[in-house]
Length: 129
Image (tube, rainbow, N blue to C red; front, side, top):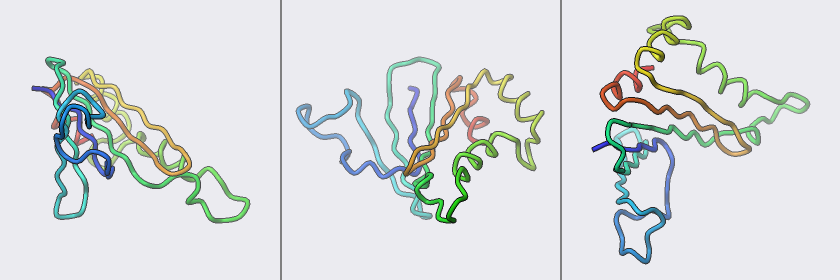
């Protein structure tokens, strides 16, 4: 079954699977904290063949403290799509296209969110990217 993964975001209001009247989403919600304190939230949903994940980083434009200098949070958001040592820019684009995945991000005052959606068979490759 496909899963929607939320990484690094403490969803305090989601305390496991509670009764129907307490549910925020119509799906069960599972939380797990890794040894490195990363919170992993998985939400199974009925969408055969589709997988999505979100990485939520609790840093945004309010964390820019140098007076008169702004835009670093948004700048770093864009830098994440310029490739890595393992997947240089053109290889990143090529693999993203090959998997049929879509990737995007957004920055707000208090968080930066990276997300990717694609074929469940390429989920591991999507995490690598």
